[in-house]
Image 1: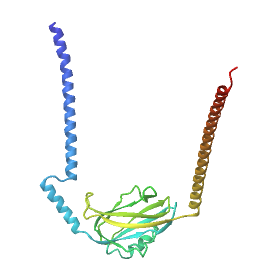
Image 2: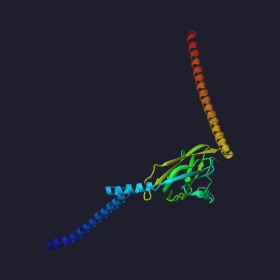
Image 3: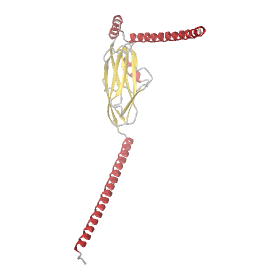
Image 4: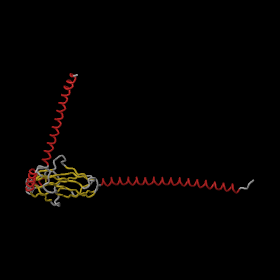
Amino acid sequence: MAGEERTEIRRWRPRRVWTLALLGAGVTLVALAFAVAAIVHSSDNPGSPSDQVEYQARIRASRSALFPGTLHVAAERRVRVGEESRIGIWACGPDSGVACPAGTATTGTGPVPDASREPVAVPLGARVRIDLAGGNPEAMTVRSVDAGGDPAQPLTERDDVAYWAWFVEATRPGTYPLVASVSVLAADSEALLMPRERVDIEITVTRTGAYTAREATRGGWAVTQWVVGTVIALLGTGLVTAATLARWRRRHRAAAGGSRRRSARVGRPDA
């Protein structure tokens, strides 16, 4: 009996050791995960007073390094429905000179900016991001020319020039408003140094012969469907009405015949 107990104790001790080892490893991993999360969170969101002061100092220094710049929009005012058009926006420093935007345009990056569009004043001297969105996503698609690239570009020198481009395509004619949102960002984060700037772009999409013919075909088919449906409905209604009248007439004739037979029996003299 004592030998069996010692055997059980010897079996139980290794199991207990392994259990405690696994438990300790699990607790260590959980603590390590929390430590990593805390480090990441503290780097993104400075929480301690000293970190907050340092963060605000960096933001103020970045803002003081900003200088005035301009945005130049290159976009066709009228495009044809179903055809892809290109919209380009240049951001230029005050000392960029001929490099903005003529020098960039000669490299084949896109259309030359329309002289009738006034340049838009924006602060530069940091990372700049521009996003373009359409007001009617169901009728117009907007996609970046460099979809896999970083939409934020550094413009830290006064002679820097940057370029963004998008393809737009409308499926229906009409006038479409687009909005370019300009964000001036801190060097080491996505924090805004200045409020976002808004640049409004309007494009008129015109009809084509193919679109008109396609719509006419769709319209003709819709009219045909309506006419056929109406005729079928009228025929059905007429058949139901005719059947109802025929049934009413049969009942009326049967009732009238029965009345005449009853009258004849009543008026016949007894033999």
